[in-house]
Image (cartoon, rainbow, N blue to C red):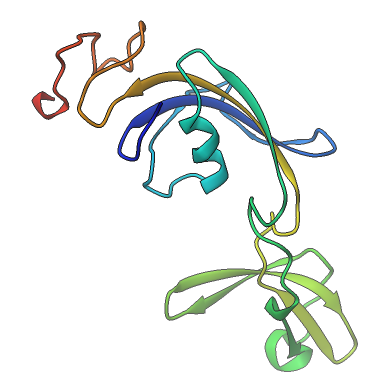
Length: 166
């Protein structure tokens, strides 16, 4: 069983419930992440924590477990002429807006004669998703490898390996 602090190497494919793939590592390099570092969705991490090297698992996540529900409070109405002038806009266009925290990407949700409604929700908000996960390797938080293949070229197989030596 995996614990917080263990680093894992996985292949995954993320799909919408209609089967359309939105992300995959299968045709490229697997990803490395440390359990508990919040790089991956909590439900994804929970699924991986119950796996052993070589296991494959498919999980289905509700929108609230994945990238969040669609939040109508993240829709904002702005004056079309004040903000965009005579620029032609259509639903689905993306707008980059500077904020104190950096640049926010907004999507044009609705275009009216005098107003435009912008959407600050994530592109994935409100969507249920499916992940197919394969656990390839584990580097325990204590620095011990628990698989038979190379974790990567920097970490050769050695039961007494200490990550700090690298």
